[in-house]
Length: 299
Image 1 (cartoon, rainbow, N blue to C red):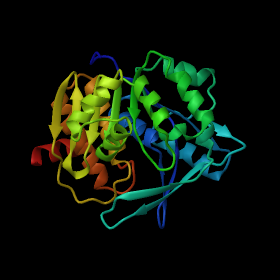
Image 2: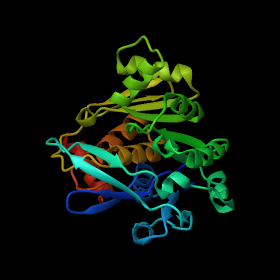
Image 3: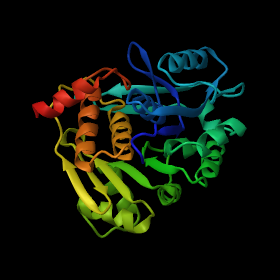
């Protein structure tokens, strides 16, 4: 895409409160991606649904403060705003209890949300929002548009199904996994391969995706872009919590690549962004370009 044209991105899926021991933080993987892209200069929007309750009002206020328009955050009188109980282990890795049903399970498109996607350059979507048929049908409609589609695989047991995952991968131009997700899905699809690189190519062979990236936690990430493999081995950081690190990684990577940055430089930038998020509390810390470039140059 042209560097002189400002990217327009829309994320579809969950917005919610991550509940930690003594506080709550706004979250949801698609929202985290949209917010990171917004921070990097992309014209970003979010399609979701919150409850007509105090938690929903707080989310709308918070999203507005963070710079996103809120007119496509729909309201539900029948279902509550999403809540997730987050538990951190000794290594600060998170596990999640995702309450169901929540308002974001019941996203119903209107003329404004449809038009927003049609007029955007990029649609970001995940797998979690497909745990309910209502939101899944809304997403399926959007997947028939000609927008560049980025699928963020986000396996949260028991909220996924391999047949639906396969359909979501088929619709995507770009697929992002973590290493465990790639190996699990590849095995479920009868892959004969044992390495990340082999299974990235295996998924490419089964789908229409022209780009696949795989995050490896502290060990960085792999990117298959235009049939070439790029690698980053990670950046050293003191981890505060891992919530949202992969989401910011994806937002930074997609923004960089679609703005024409060379793939290795884009991957380095994304890995540094994800590392800095892991070194901060919550999924959406403020991070400057200077901090990102400083971490790249230090390693």
